[in-house]
Length: 274
Length: 91
Image 1 (tube, chains in turn green, red):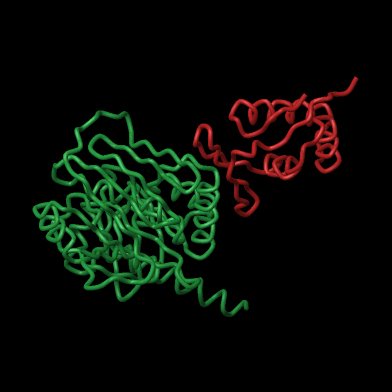
Image 2 (image 1 turned 30 degrees about the vertical axis):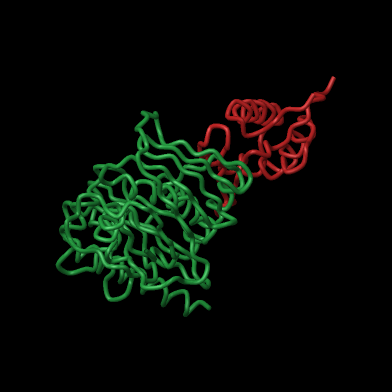
């Protein structure tokens, strides 16, 4: 079975038919008919006995990442583009491993995952980032009738051909709506925050950088990986405006319209200045 | 007698200049630190190993404040950077 998440192809292999069937159902929107160039291969083995760990553990030795959670243990070779993972036969474990897998391989593909809800409105991507309990799922539920929801938990940002794109993912929280495989140019990044006057306010680049870093789903303890990540975050913060927003006390449409107008007026000003 | 301590950035750090600030991520503690103003300038001067007195003298020449105050501030700042594993003190 082939999946395409964030424009990155995975081939999933397992000799457990039940697992393959459930995976096909869970990731149905991301199934790809045939192999793409540069595909990653993930071999899944079953029957892993759960071991309680304090946090997801990632150890890097040269090109190989050894990753372990409560219910999986895997080896990821980023050069050979292969992974072997042993998982416990419980619902959601493979999805959990894939989140960690993507957090690692994305750096090789100019991207990262952000704790956020992503919305596509008129082919512009609006990202609303926040920690657990900050209101991401509530935001997705409020937006689902008017906007294409890209995820309510982990949205992917990638730089592709010099453009910063927002990709939908199957890494969701409690949002019940359908999420399709799609991408859209990133228009703004907002940080969910209650009690902001007027619904939203623009923030300085340094503040945006710090807030974005705090919301990135990332486990590496490797210095080179950290450097790649912060270089990419810097590129995003140079290109995209950052805001604080309060979506609980203000209508989401008025906030998005306000952000859109502010971005447009700043673009016009910079074009006039140029 | 002057200080013989030589100081250099810990090579297990990742960093990025963001406007007039420097963001530093330490590998050992995996924490992010923001160095503003003189802090960012000191980080720049630590690119290659430098004698502590030489570093203080550079800052004294560049900033308009009493030399004793700059010395105290830089020493305190370097101690903090060392505690946060952002620099290494050699000798």
